[in-house]
Every structure is written in C-alpha cells, then in structure tokens.
Amino acid sequence: MAQKILYCFRNRTNQVEEQIRNKLEEKDIECSITPTYCMKLCIFCENLNVVIVNQDIIMEKNQDQLISKILEKLV
Image (tube, rainbow, N blue to C red; front, side):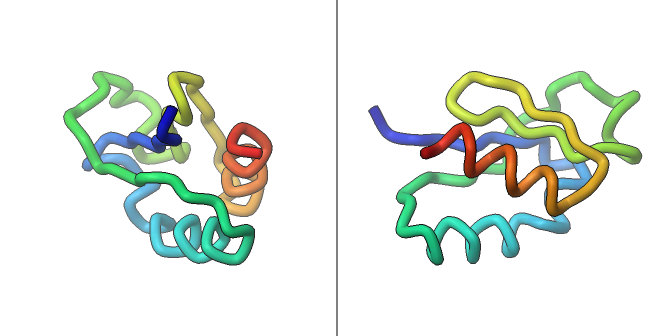
C-alpha cells in the first residue's frame, strides 16, 4: 500500500509541506503529499496543522510535533 498524506488546501499545513518533504527524504520514506479538497475542519485551519496520514488524522499546533507524529505513523 502506498503511503499518503492529505491535507486541506486551505490548511496551515501548506506552510510546512516543504519541511515535511525534506524530513521524509532524510529518512528515505516514500510518501505522497497531496493538498486536497476542504475537509470541513474550518475551526482548526488557522490554529492547527491538520493532516490525514494513511487514514489517521493528526492535529498539531507545533510544526515540529506535527512532523514527528507523521514520521511515527509512516515508520
């Protein structure tokens, strides 16, 4: 199964996508990162990074913690 990260194109995660890609490259993890449709989680968009990693939702305010949790799910 291919590993996937999805996030709403309006989400704050858009600002850290490049950092996530760099971390995945460092760890030799193959994963697609796709900005997608609105997830209707608008109450979170401005305050949290919200991503779906292999069908699990991760919500984090801190970008470093977000990347950490993404790596946990992908390893």
